[in-house]
Image 1 (cartoon, rainbow, N blue to C red):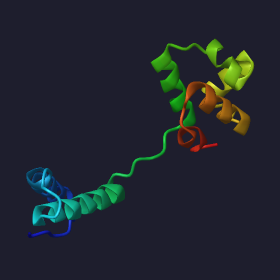
Image 2 (cartoon, one colour):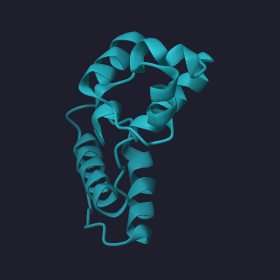
Image 3 (cartoon, rainbow, N blue to C red):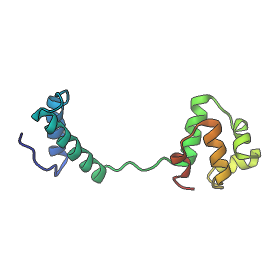
Length: 118
């Protein structure tokens, strides 16, 4: 096992290639140990250089609307009047905790997505 730090994207690609070689290793083997170390190194490098930001609440709502074929009218039970729905979707009004709970319970939008900018 010859593992070295990942310092740039070239090192990252090399780590991915090596990971592909040992990915199916049996537990308890040196290859399995190498796989665990490579995964940790890759995750650390990617988190530092390519962080993934939390979803925007409005984008999460619009995504769910698209998935379920919902209209703005369909959001009224969760958000309130048509004017309020429009304000939320146009980012002129934030979500209240009550709206967040209703959207989570009714449309199964994860709290993490709804609370990211609340």
